[in-house]
Length: 374
Image (cartoon, rainbow, N blue to C red):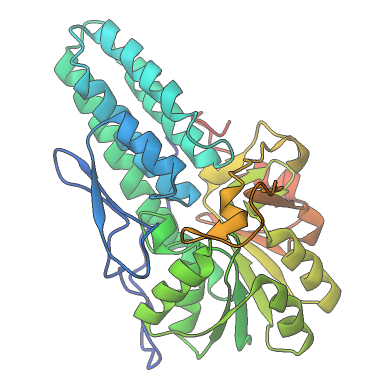
């Protein structure tokens, strides 16, 4: 695991606007016996936590978007490997290694696009396979526990560093636009794109334009909820209003997250991100991606190789249990689209701000110790 991280930043200093604080809610929490997840399918109407005790419950929570956002999925997966392996009560270290591998393979089938999931699962495999055969089952389980805990704390540190590095980029901007939910609900920390925005708002007044993010409204349900709780001025817009907001001069910078970044900088994010980048290029507005290095898949040469998840028709043909389309309507419902690196002004990581040429400059950030994003 690549451990040399920028120290945690504690928030803005000397600001009369606001400060970047630890969120009042926890997206996920290890209780000592189980994993508690904030059920994001119910927000903002209800705040409810569900308890995860095994890998099947976690698989379902990832698939149903109870937990979502690439970093948060990765953190949850680390705990899922530990819970699933512990539940099966292996009798030897060899059996434990085999079981942990089976659990990791199973969790890998939950969602295909977010590379942090596979990165975290590989970190668990690498940690447990590094143990000598003479070690006990107890040591093996402790290794999986410690790996999951490290992945969680690692994400907290990465988010804080991304916020610190990215906050100056909307310099002079009075209006910033974001898409989907790349804040604390998507991570174990203060978030990626929204973490950048909150840190920027700690030094000056900003209005954040929040795409509702069809079809599941993560922007309306989650980002708007998070910004309201943080006391940041925001305006909720439909996805189709973003170009008009840019044309009218309301937006001077765009910051989004990413679920997978190819070696050349092409970035997959929630569907609807690509049109934002195209419009930003047209209007001369900087378009930034904020994501940890674990989101970079160095095995993929370009975005053409990024697997794109296709989701159910029901997400488009209705909402909240109410049908809005004729019965039997079929849909085209990809969960993500890919932004060409040519449209990206900068990629904000925990190691700093990366600009083109991305293949060369991202390669310099590649972890030397292996892992799931090799």
